[in-house]
Image 1 (cartoon, rainbow, N blue to C red):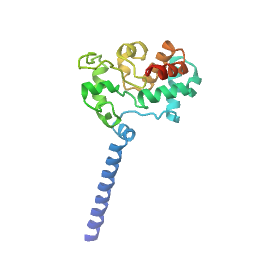
Image 2: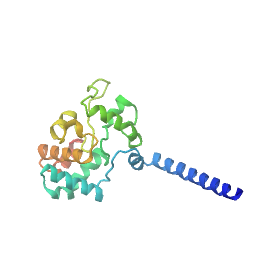
Image 3: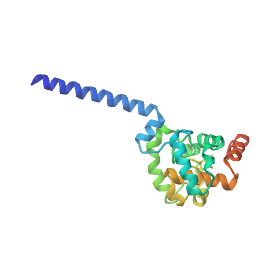
Image 4: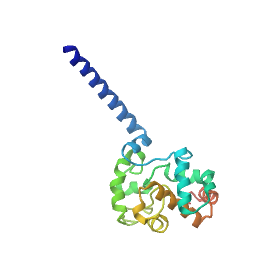
Length: 189
């Protein structure tokens, strides 16, 4: 019987060590951490990214071949790194350093709830705070209303954010390559 307790104790200790190692790895890998806290992540260029953007193109009524566009992949990567609902780096001025980092993804859904109701801090409410963009395409609130299928309620919903990004690109630039060219020239799109 004592042997059973020792075995159980060793297994419990091993499980605890593995859990701690996993937690440490998750905290040091922003993508893994985001997934653990419920923030969807789509690695730019991955199969999951292609599936998401294919569905978004269908919903938006845009060309399916945009999914294979290097320009789209580049804009997607540089704007969000693949994180759904990611706040623009300027949100760091309002909510603290590195708020927009994937390591802080656990905090984002609480703010999404406010933003989905249209409650955003005003631009200029903090010195230097001018961009209230968020999401896969880093859309500003007025563009969220215009391009997201459900307006603000689309914040944090992968397909909706992707649809909004594609609609914005189509409306403003015509296609992803033109959007990427503009980004390369101006540092934004």
